[in-house]
Image (tube, rainbow, N blue to C red; front, top):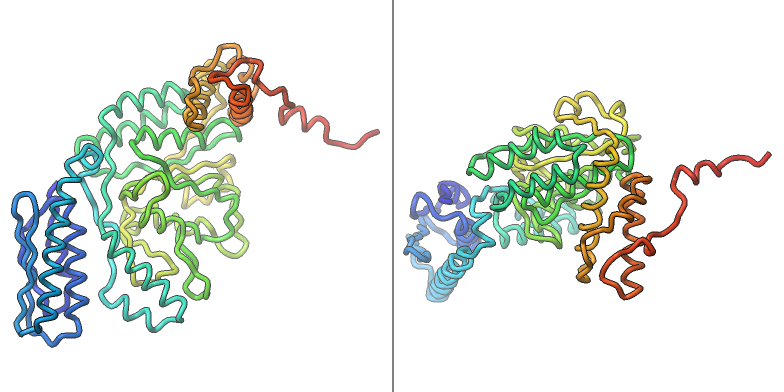
Length: 431
């Protein structure tokens, strides 16, 4: 994917010029941005009328050079030569690494982060702790670059989506109306933002489990999961205000900047917002940032409160799946920004598919080579439970099988426990 390089020139001081190809492969854009940033920092204190960053595309690598209008001195010249040579070597390494299959599926990229050239100096106007935090964040961002890859679905995405619909049949409309069309456009190289989804239904029917399974069908290694039942303010999405001495970036910024343990960050991840009808908004509304994030125009210039106006994020490509039990507790202006799907309890046949899918994921997740097929007699026992309760029992059954030195689960491993309904019947006063 060829990326337009005009934006690089905008990061330089007034004396800076860039001479380079109009377009370059996307995997080099962060490297070029980094070279411009480092040279800019080196020469910022030098009295210059003009300096040109000359970058030449030599088929499989880049050649970097700096031409200044005045003599910079032997030490500075040697440093710049070493820097140019190092960046050239890096371009060769990146080009070779990007030829592998892992990168080929993420070749398309998008600029997510931008920052003011004065950001580092403006940090000095803040408290010492805040200034150090902003400086550290800026340095990490410059090292990782402004660009994040756009994750495309894998070559087998049609099969994965079919499996998703088969394993979660009561979510078929979500798959057919939102997920499948979106992935088809992305797969063809189009730019498309998936319609934000709200799943509404009684607790324990598999809404959250479906959302995580949808991430796999999209070709993602995982999703950012935020449980709003635990949130009392908007810091998870928008960070905490820089007014506070202990302010910190939110989970969303961290996820977009550095990714998580499951994989590197991408420009179009899935964000799962659970229990959005249960958040407490006595003083601060935890959902306030969603109004901006769900609109393409405002999401394209989103800011984390702890970083102020210095760093801007383009989050217009985020994919959202929200989950709730009671839609009446969701503000109307928020509902108008979401595609609302009412999810019914699965039928017995549908629940069989859900139970088998949950067991397969659990068996694969413990990474002990367990058989992923669940015996029919265990599936039938699980039908008397909600998907949430069934998942708990399946986890216990797996643990029992492992403790008994078996690679498969039998009915003997199934724990005999009271259901939530049976427990509630016991609650009350004795006559």
